[in-house]
Length: 224
Length: 223
Image 1 (cartoon, rainbow over the protein chains, first blue to last red):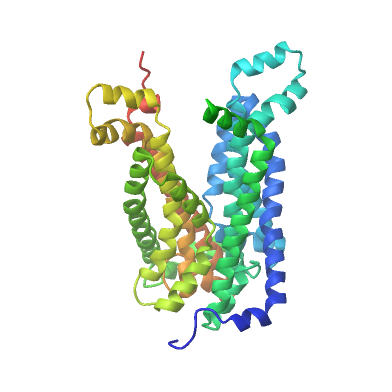
Image 2: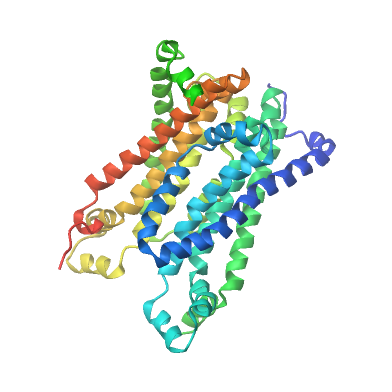
């Protein structure tokens, strides 16, 4: 290798259109599972918080799913969803996202103090309005903490899909390895890290926006 | 299901350098060494920042950023730059994978101990180190073990990628099976990795049961 620099900038310039395509593919395969996972985790988490006997079996199943290696699941799915299709990647990642999000939703809802719930009932909130206006907003910080973990790990897991032919930026790792050429690998690692950092930052901003009282409270504490 | 019978029923798969016992052993060596190194690095650091509160924001932020590093990319990059031959190229990405959950959980575990409990320990005349070892660590142990369990499962699952750069372990079956369109082999390897990950999960449940004090786990109610 000796003379080969770690990054050849001209390679990046020449291949920028392909890199953009891979990046877009990566974003879709990483974020669809998180969004779908959240949509499925909300009702399941609500059920788990309301009927406690449901909670242990659900979380137990999700723990088992979470411990299945992604590469192994991709391979088992190939005969069903096809080689090198988005579905092969998206389906397992959705389950991983749910495995993180269901406990987060349940923990968030159970973190609502009893006196708050009772006040809401006393003020005449119907169960649905109580859920939407009181319980879910209070659960937001815990749910978002889970969402951050799910998003970041989803972004990092997509690249493993390159081994079964569809991995977004992960393709750059295979490409660089097969040609013994480090530039694509560095580009892939850096772009994945940037993507995760941007997604994480957006979720932190979303949390501030959704829970204005948490920053207000810390300002009050500083003033006092 | 027939595929599984093809793979596991074949006597040739149970002996020799490509036999299941040896591949499982290789896999456990990669995963075990990485986990050990990660524990040695992350637990003392997590205890220290949790106890003193110094540098906490920085450490937690960088640990979260490290979660995003793709192991496959890190692995091929390290091998390309360092060459194969030693274990280091596999260990570096796997340790990078295992450190964040252990570090964050250790820190959160120590920090999350009820301040009244900590103050009571100081009030009884214990010194900083005694408070940490005698009170904070036992109370935080379930969370610390959870971090180690998460790390262990991820490392066992991810050690498969070592095969991609020509190393052993259970990933061999998956990568070779895919390359030669030998699906029974690939799926057999996948099932073995999943079984190993579940075994690790069970092992940690057992360790937790043995090491966590009954007063902390709530198995013994204190009035």
